[in-house]
View 1 (tube, one colour):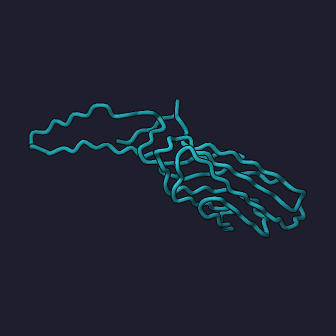
View 2 (tube, helix red, strand yellow; view 1 turned 30 degrees about the vertical axis):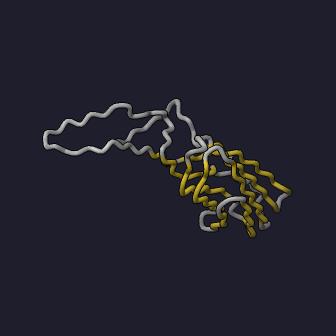
Length: 158
């Protein structure tokens, strides 16, 4: 069963971005990600795409969990965390040295995007309480339900 809900959704993550433009040659991005789901759950395969300016000459990324690597083809730092425990916080700091440009143009900040999977968590709160299978072929059923929340387009503007 697959369904989509757009109202009254409990978000699994909260992003706290802080962007500081230091002069015209440097940008610093601090991102704190907080898991809002229960501590007994764990998100897996979490990938956070932190955009940086296209005229970045040198990018350094420092994180307390997982691996953060600059991807110049995406103009972003890809931060990968294998296991993200519920009710925890993780940080990444990105420092960008910019090349000089001839045109004075403000950096248009694209949104931070996120991909993840959280087993046994439902953002909508939908729970299966009763299921009846009517089949005369003697089908042997197993009582088991799997809840998985996947981040499709999970984005936050900075």
